[in-house]
Length: 251
Image 1: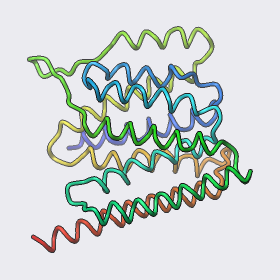
Image 2 (image 1 turned 90 degrees about the vertical axis):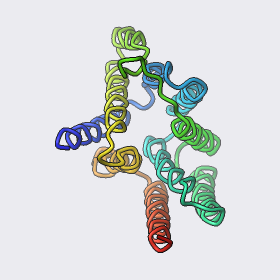
Image 3 (image 1 turned 90 degrees about the horizontal axis):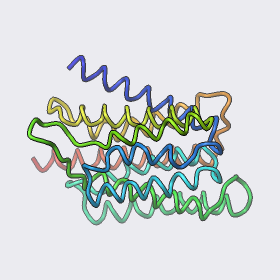
């Protein structure tokens, strides 16, 4: 258990490092930096792996034209989607949360369209679609292992870090390696049965990542983005709490 907690803390620290690195070089991060971790996982996923690869490609292409805070905050959709489409959910939960998320998203889109915040409204929609696709791919993931229980990975993808480093994208290379480290830790933790690590990680990583931006004095987090992030997180938490209480009442 102690080693599991240690891995969890390391994963959270790697997420903070990735976000801070991305915040100082958003316009200078090649798409390849996000594709390398997806390529590393590709042999396991099949169709889901290709969907994850495509979503990372699209997300990476939107980064230069979007505020970094918004690009990180959009990952808060992961816990929202996890809760809304859980086994305990129902059509009313999906409808109500869908209306809340749509309203918050429209607020961001109108703010961007009116010039009150940087970035493009169309790119925000594309980012949201990419994150939703990534969630769908991960939630339908089917791991492949050999007879010894070792999962398949494309280790050759790590070689792609070398040309990025040589080309002067040292930060992008570090981001790729950190993302692979996060994925490796997540794989190890989700194998354990002593705790629902996958659910805990889905809550923690997007939250810790954006919180690292908020507390960083060098990063300007637009107020609309912070409010939307807080509302999305609160919506996911309250929905999960209501579903838990309802499940306990039925039991």
